[in-house]
Length: 360
Image 1 (cartoon, rainbow, N blue to C red):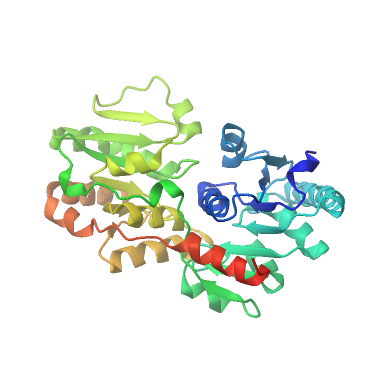
Image 2: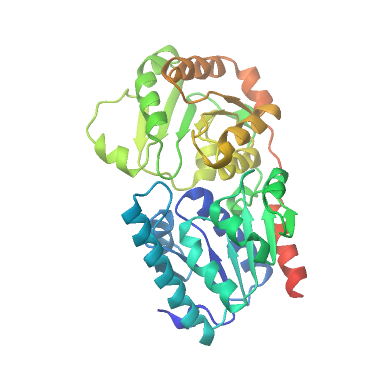
């Protein structure tokens, strides 16, 4: 292990999916600007999005051999519990000699070892929960945390005994800039499909089915489709419409959103926060079965604010999704009404709370 990573450092941990990883990066970026002399290090898992992106980043990091618990067989769950215990023990042993300043966790199984080690050693730790319904890790640790930074006010009711601060969902620094108005976009207009960093099987299938007819109906539009690495590999060589481009993963999401006239996506809290920051209209298909049905709640909140349309994933998805996409693509006035950028202050609010608690 890289011992020098942790002495006096701010440890940021969270990953598995972009919904956990990107808020962690946003908070690290904000901390680096606020405390330029404070070392910052990431802890994550050897699988998931952080395993792919951290080695390409400037952030010092440690990746641990841990796995998720949700939806696993009894044998796999037992193996995951054993790996978590080992990783927690490794960090405890290391941090007794090379003690971090504080730990920030944004959720996901990759955050568990660092947060559990911090609790055991009395290191101040803070949690960020983006969704209306907290994840299992946040529920377990909230009462012991120095603070829980909430993306939505509704999460407070699920965390009795915790010191909750309503902050919103952090977005990376690239989303804090001014974005060009969507009304200035010129043909070819772009439908951007983002199913999440890992892709989304049902959403991808519906997009593949509807794309040829939709693009023929709207010759001034093209389609950029983040399919996720697995589907992209499975479909390598598949014939697509000439204006349908599929990629496994999109870097520079701020630029891709800025170029989009309509975004078709899931409704994770990070996605919603980024869409609001850049002011782009969305057609949302919430992931069914998300904890506490939080993706549906997120999408409904976006609809209530007049920022998005909603199609639920179900037996009628192949019929309802192309119909709603066509409605929005055909009506620039409706899209313009959804396109309202909103400044995001979540990073500042979270770090102000940390600074107040630690007296710095």
